[in-house]
View 1: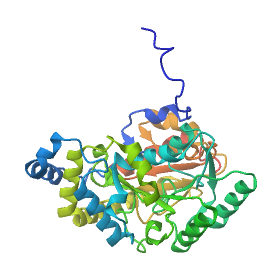
View 2: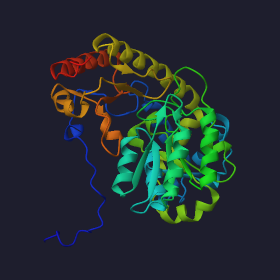
View 3: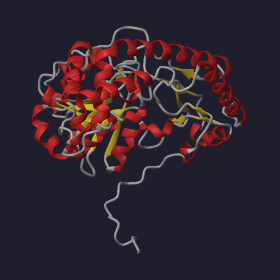
View 4: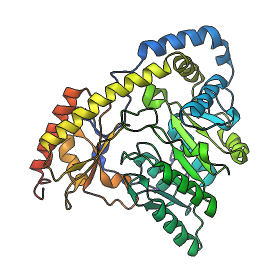
Length: 398
């Protein structure tokens, strides 16, 4: 059968990425995988066993449209206790990771040609969602305090002057991916003011809020300080418990509930996964988060030490207080996109800066993740990467 004339013409727009990014390598510094050294496999297995005894009969039916009620109540309590957000349970929905929640929200909001505002560099997965939906992505200057809210307002004001009403402000407000910065309390307040002033909702992603390593406590989520239904929220347990579990959640304002329920009918994540995650987090959540934090600290420190030893001083690295990412700026003229093929050939994979920009600029930037490998592997992999960059001439301007 010839399918060429049968397949829909309404395909997502193509998004350019490096071919080498899909290769298998010995050292994976390109994905924020769950820390395998702290994965609670025995605890999850026991939670599944107990769930099957107590709730197994529920698997005969389709799950509730918004997801497992017990887990949603746990999320509501966690948001209130840890993120300063008092949210009704019926505004929380479960999803296949944070990406599932983001996809559903974008389906509700975005039409081709719509404009969204994001950080100066924005997570490649969500950026690809925007671009594949043919959105106009506007990057906003970002520094150590997160998205620059003066620059944000200037961008919105300019768009409105040209007759363009932005659809949303998207921000990873905690340990931002890829830059690792956290939006300051002052800028959170200012961003909410801007959102309300111009009628542009904030889509707040706090998928890394459970991964604080050290430094000051996190400021409260914008979800908890907004009083005009201006904030949509997402987070996930994927990176905390296992990427293969694909379990996240979203929180939407009451006026969006009917739309979200219509879009999400029949699309809840695995009910068994939700049952198990609920049981595990209820009994072991706090202690597991602490164990993950301790492990990530050792791995972060190992990577920073290796970068300091093997890369020249002209290469600048963030020293994150949480999350799983180190963001680097290499000398002007460096091309991390072009060097990726050679790195993959040597068994090392990373993310070149341009994949985090809609215009594919930023070739002298690089993202490295430290969650997946043990400290010895991290040291060996960074040494190999430095050797590749030196052979490829990336240190010539250093």
